Length: 322
Image 1: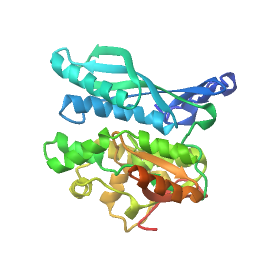
Image 2: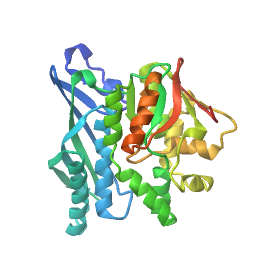
Image 3: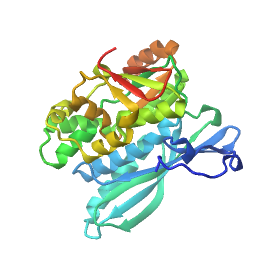
Image 4: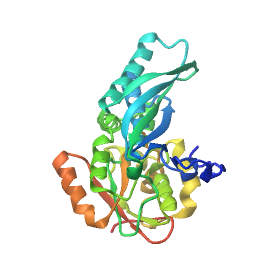
């Protein structure tokens, strides 16, 4: 949906600070001079077998959009599509996983809606709050900024191999831990140092979401392939070309605006196009604040990787190394 732009008269809605015309992570509506609400939704079919973990991952993924806009999670509503034959105890565990995750984020689930569906689907509508002057978007990146990523890539390919019953348990554990980790601490850190731009890396992969940042900001992103982290197992499965279907979809959508060094292995480039579930944040940080970000990350135990920089131009270039 974020590739469909509204044609409404923008001036007629001055309190809509971020809408579909922005191709950003969530909508933002100003309520008063010092309060705006963030609205987003996300849901998907199971990515793991355990129902509690599925609910928790789906919730963490939905909450991430609020953090990507610089906000705090307040309220959520369940979105549920469950087969009538699904045992009640499994449904309850999915909902419990979602509720516990929202509570962990400082918010509460206040209801929702359920329909019958042949395949389970679960997610959330999420409301967050932010000061209107402190909204973070993917449109603020500036030449000279440093690009930071807060989670390794690889969840998409690992969960695909898991569904086929071929994933190693240690690789699954790493992917689960990543998906269950909220982006709250990283988002709080970025807000504290007043960064320029922010987005989360989910269904479009790092190249797709990076492309949105580049286009909305009117800049060019330069990524360094050897600086981008991967979860254990991701490169192993990429060598076997066990990519999900979304990888090809993303490549078709974005490849005409992206250039990659010829000596980067094709399978690594494909990992950059691969969708992520509950992925990390991609931040455009002013160059002079780079050391502050790294210091705070060390002090607070927040994972942080410097993966590129912002330059003048358009699109994305992926270099093998700096």
